[in-house]
Length: 349
Image (cartoon, rainbow, N blue to C red; front, side):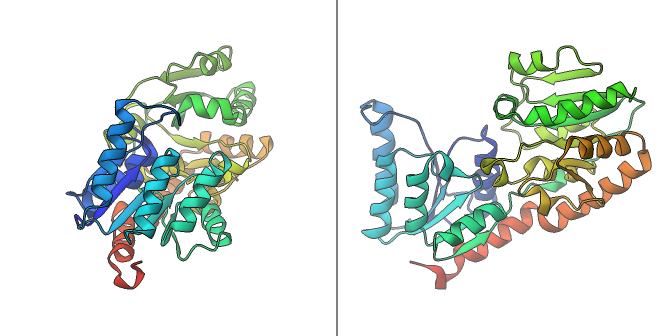
């Protein structure tokens, strides 16, 4: 399917780009080109900017390119203008893929891309509702999906029970998400619960490490990992013997639109999940069946305490979560859904 051109935020090191563009392209259209964005100021006349504009223009005006698959709105305005030309003057079909609340920090670009799009792929229900309110021609809910085949259930080891978190630690610390988790863990430690915390993706961020400096439980930091490798999350979950996966989030406009990737990765590994009752987690986590949703400090403590003290409960919830991922969030399901939309001639501009 060389008739499609992908444009995205970053290379394979960027999780959202890797999962919503690169892995989809590898299966759906392995010969298709992917152009990822670079940041530059409006007055910048660097060779990198000129090269990117020239390369993009050459590709979008090519007769064989029929569809532009645009992931996120993090593109400079001159690139957005070229995309508008491609849509209005060249008749290219536009698919705009969104997995974050980009309108919070890039309102006008997000609205411009939504208005020019023939189809918007929404990674979460919050994004779906936002796009519908923008009167987009067609909105399709396309959850962030993973290749569940490469995720395995970690081996069980003797206590302490390992509570694992995986992601971009610096950004989540700045957003205040770790405060949700630390408060609950501190209370559990006061009750002499045997536990340890593994933060996979601490990114050498010293403020994050200082935040957990004097706690009464072991904290393991994984600063660096090969995020280009799709197997890295599963490898880390297994290597550090995760028993419970956690996804703490403060309730904010941005977090309500997130795609709950962490919960999906834990569930694919047959781990029980404790997630904040915020945004997409309410649709991903089957409360009481694949994990627990918690909002208050009391709910977080209760959920973690139940799981820490009950091996059979962890196994039962983990097995159910694995089935949910295979049914709803597998890469095969996502590719099949996207392929139907991309190849449907009735949806062409």
